[in-house]
Length: 362
Image (cartoon, rainbow, N blue to C red; front, top):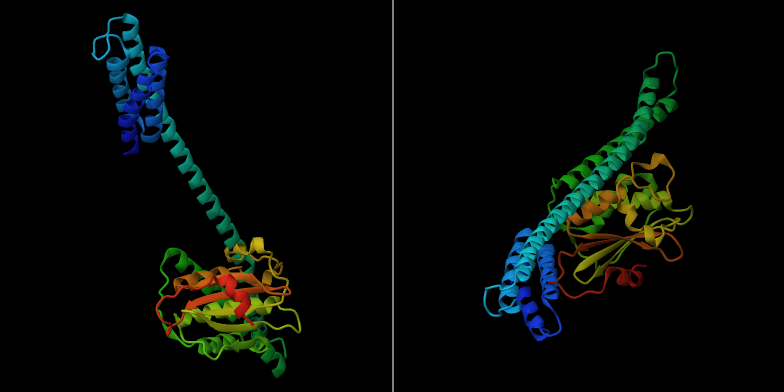
């Protein structure tokens, strides 16, 4: 559309300008300027607007600038040749510009496909590496424990049997968690995750999440404001998010400085903070923690496939919430989970999440 508009408007504007410069420019200069207008139309709209501009330019050149003026008759053969060459060159230029633009688009599409394939290969390589170690390790531990229990050559006391059963149970639970994370990430990327939003009591979800984490969760300090309302969420998905965030905080919290789980009301939303005082993550790498198979600052390959935070953000966004990282004062990482409050009034203007978090969270 813009190409055809330029093909019709530019010759008119060019004629008006050249009419005022009639005594300063000759026909050759006029031809070059009209040719420039044709190139512009072809760059914007392609070959057909370029051809329209070429025909319009030749007509205007003949009628207004080629003697005798204001007629389509051409007296001098040189002028006839100039007009003919103009139409031919303008047509060729339009075709070349269109061809170059098409090949540029094809090259851009090919480059985008190459980047997508490279990203797919990177993800596949990371997934294979994760499966090769993180899934095999708990499976091998469970297999070893069960094989030892079944061995008839070993005389195991009750304490040994109990320890082996606990090892197998823990390994299988860990294996189940890893597989669930992989499956849920696949569902999120495919848009097949079922989400049912309803009022959910935050304290109940926190209690279930801490119970899922087992004995280590006893260290977590929970400080929920008394006026925190129910949130609009899927209870199962919110529990998964809380488990992942708290488990991540426990993993990096130093001895004697347990994680803090806090929640405050923020206008029409509830702001949940999971605070740790570990090594933290540089501000310029905050967004990278949500990439699958990333374990920034974590060289321990026994901690999972690096899907916890990526899955947590995906699940949060599926519940129409947000999950953002922040820096804990004094060092560490603060994960800020923001969900719609069920009992809140209709939308009201609120300050930004990052600006309010520092002042509201304990």
